[in-house]
Amino acid sequence: QVQLVESGGGLVQPGGSLRLSCTGFRSGILLVATGWYRQAPGKERELVARLPRSSSANYADSVKGRFTISRDTAKNTMYLQMNSLKPEDTAVYYCTADIIGSDTRTHSYWGQGTQVTVSL
Image (cartoon, rainbow, N blue to C red; front, side, top):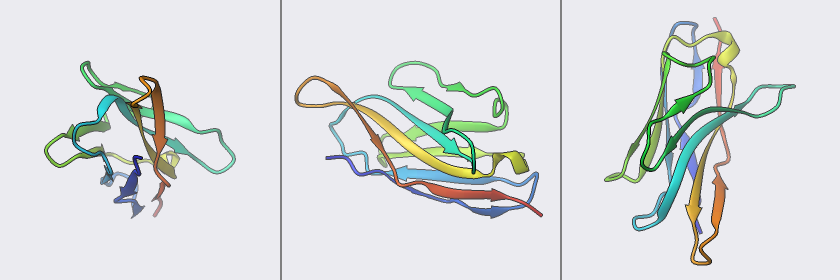
């Protein structure tokens, strides 16, 4: 069982930065990809960034050049560095992981979410 936990959310002014963290990746898991999604009030959940195990990250157009996804395998932690934040980045942010289980199937896991609010 994989339990993902996000942290690092909060209130920040426009133009500011935050770094989200996601822990819960055990050593030895067969990781397919990790990612970050977000959901703003009244909107559908959307992909923010995705980092496959062995290829380059991809980003939503709205965050390209401002957000960076990364993974520290030694610390079993994933990050989302968010710079130049805008009010429209306000949302609950979720980390996800696609992992191959003992049944050889890919299973998706989600964290509980962390609130990011960009406002004066």
